Length: 201
Image (cartoon, rainbow, N blue to C red; front, side, top):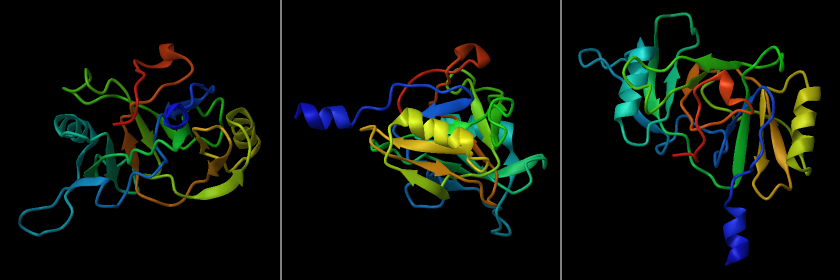
């Protein structure tokens, strides 16, 4: 019984330049359990894109929502078309690079909260992809060596480690729609953002 409980715990470690998501495998897109709402135009039936700040507030009002899907160009003002829930998986913890000064390959960055939902989601990650499913390397190594392997690989944009600390995978970038992630997540330096520590929804 105790052994089973220990395996379900998340990895209690932080790495500079990486946001740490507990109990998540990196998948956030396009399955019945992750796609909570697809925004549609009532007249045409086509996807409807809304401003990311408005979408963040909508997400905060919906039970389970903690991620947003969008379009390929993050500079377009109306760039979110779906409300999502990251798929909880107590097998893994995920670390996404967000600080390009520390991790030049980072494709995520910190993003502002919604206009009226900063209490629930005080910080978001804005990423160039809406899910992390491209595995570029797999290692039977502890978390610290998975991290150092990522730092040495110029294509690595993040990684995940097994919560029993025996193995992990490196993530690479692919061409996908833009994504936003509310967490919960932590970094090694809470002064960088009004972040909080919790487990995945």
